[in-house]
Length: 256
Ligand SMILES: [Zn+2]
Ligand SMILES: [Zn+2]
Image (cartoon, rainbow, N blue to C red; front, side, top):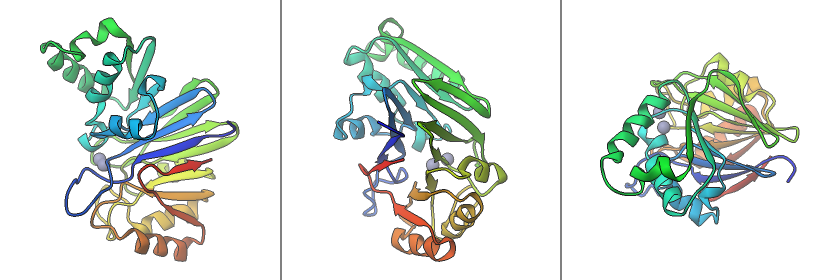
């Protein structure tokens, strides 16, 4: 496979009611023999199954940040790996704080007989903390982290393979590093949270401003809350920027 294929496992937030059917954030990136999961909401392991992807085929999980809507499915994903006999190494990478956060969860589960208590005997789980800049290079896929501006420390990730670049914002408000993350990429998966500006999040007008500045080839709107009207949001961005705007849907596959 030249370039990368992104499967949107969840295009929404963590709201499961009010007619909002979008699942929480999770994105599968496949490139050649590499497979990376970006964020892992509650239910992401079910979404992987629905996409026909065996979680034991994942090389790594990159967490943008530790808010529960982005990390609430990690224990379930690891449990599924233990149950299905995973071997070898699995890396979880995230911003500083990731190791303490996940070690606490694993320690709590280690006291309860069950799959998670056996995790260290099952496979080589490495929990690593990235710094801004290049932090991953494996199987022809390289990744760099960008510290963005959110209520919690949030990394945007830029993945590059076969001359293509895909950028994921996680949760952020507009900032200089966000334009650097997205600069000239082939596909930008950008949070578009509500119609109106709100602290720590993106809205249609701030997405349009970002696209004018960073010039991605295409933008896909993600992390859409029930308060967002996706069609109206995409219309505003198209009118102001003029480029290709995709409204991400769960299970949508995007090539870059
Ligand atoms: Zn957040
Ligand atoms: Zn979020």
